[in-house]
Image 1 (tube, rainbow, N blue to C red):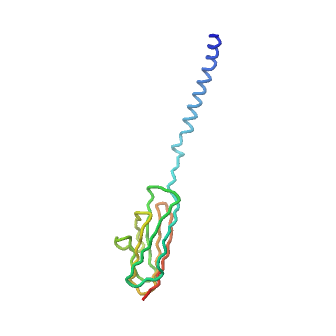
Image 2 (image 1 turned 180 degrees about the vertical axis):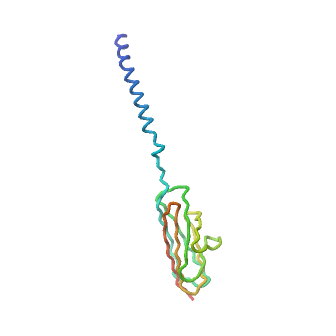
Amino acid sequence: MKELFYKFKMILRPIFGLLAILITSFSIFSCNTADELEIQQNFPFEVNVMPVPKEIADGDTVEIRISIESTGSYKENKYYLRYFQFDGRGTLQYYDEPPYLPNDLYLIPKKQFRLYYTSTSKITQSFEVWISDDFGNEKNLKFQFNNVD
């Protein structure tokens, strides 16, 4: 009986050794994904704006509530804002910070924020706001306010 066990052990030893080598090599080659691992950073986004009044008087301020909603999340992604006023005159600002200058790029610190537009004109006013991210995704918002005397 000991001889049979010894022969059986001698036959299985190379099989287990080969199996160990195969498992080790499979693990090494299948887990070598450092070059293949891709972290998605570029997520498209949508911009939602709460309704705003259609009319504004000279000197009045309108609050514009904006929310940026991304399809994914990449912590390092930053959002920026720039605007240009086509008709009339007014100022656009983030909370109580200084008013934005047209066509300058400003960092948006949060995905939900409020802008304040103050009319300094007695005619219809229109402007556009562009919101972009680090990856070139951009959304355009158009605003128009009719003058109220």
